[in-house]
Length: 170
Image 1 (cartoon, rainbow, N blue to C red):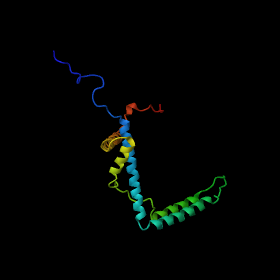
Image 2: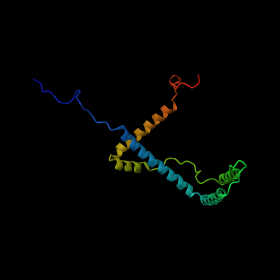
Image 3: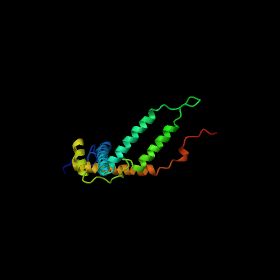
Image 4: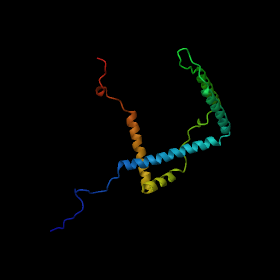
């Protein structure tokens, strides 16, 4: 009589255990957040390196001081009792136009993804979540793919008029 083997076939709990979806998405969110912070830091480094940044900063500080003074002014009241803010809003518009002429500090162009940061982010994610760097890389890529699919689904969504709420018009 042949020996019965205990492996293979349908039985409870066979195969590789799947990792929870939300754990993968937490790794993705952590990595994306670090990359976004690195991109913002790189952007501000580029702004600070420009020669006209200090002049813009002084100009903005002057205008902010002037605008605080304008806000503290007592507003003229009309006969009905409500205050008129025409003068301060005109001055605020003039201040904004003056700042736009010189260029605002925060109006730096968007920078591309920072170089050589991916490995550092993956190492931090692997340490934080207790996984290997390769698994962190796979889960980051998985999360990007899922986010892309979700954006596509949301952008192509067309509501079905038959499922709409009934209108109040009768």
